[in-house]
Length: 280
Image 1 (cartoon, rainbow, N blue to C red):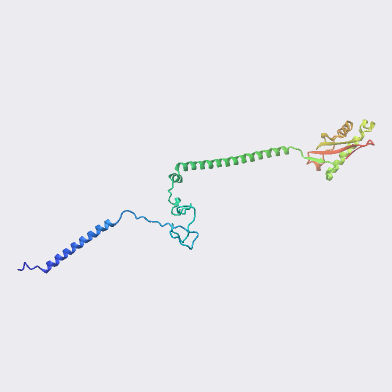
Image 2 (cartoon, rainbow, N blue to C red):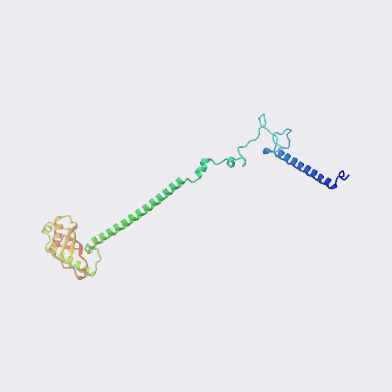
């Protein structure tokens, strides 16, 4: 009798098992259906083409060929409606944004090690060449400076051998010592020249002017006589030179003029019509 009566505890346990089994089956069915409903193909986005109307119209067309922001009646001579076109691309369709960089350009942008080494060697060679040029220029300047110093020494030695010359002319401003020696020279020339006046000039009435350069040494001796300006007649030129020769030797330089090695005297011998010789 007891075995025929089912325990309440057993009934409850059996119900729980059935409920769990049903719930598990429902979850499996849901998961399987969900996995088949998901599509692996990407969804395609449909773009809406809108035409920009530039001339709005109050009248709405019965059949519109295109979608625009406002109503516009079409016109033209074509039988079929044509989509307005433009030669400008939108920023999203610009090939500049989507075009891949060519492999040649990428390779050109990448630095070439061999080229870098070659360029570095070239730069070093250029730097070495510039350094060599600078050194060569400095050497040339040094050589030029040395040559100039040598030339200056040579000229200094040459000029140091030149005599200290005092030039005395009728136009030169003379000191008192120079004036006294010049006056002495003129008096002696006129004295000797008039005593030895050329006979041919007296006979033929020849007169004129002769300019001479007389170079005297410190002892009063003559180093050189030179005709600077001829009278035009040989007799007067020779007479002027002979007067200097006959008047020599002259007095030695006074102490005040001893610092000079030579005195250059430039005077004019004037043979006048009255047969008188003067110097000035």
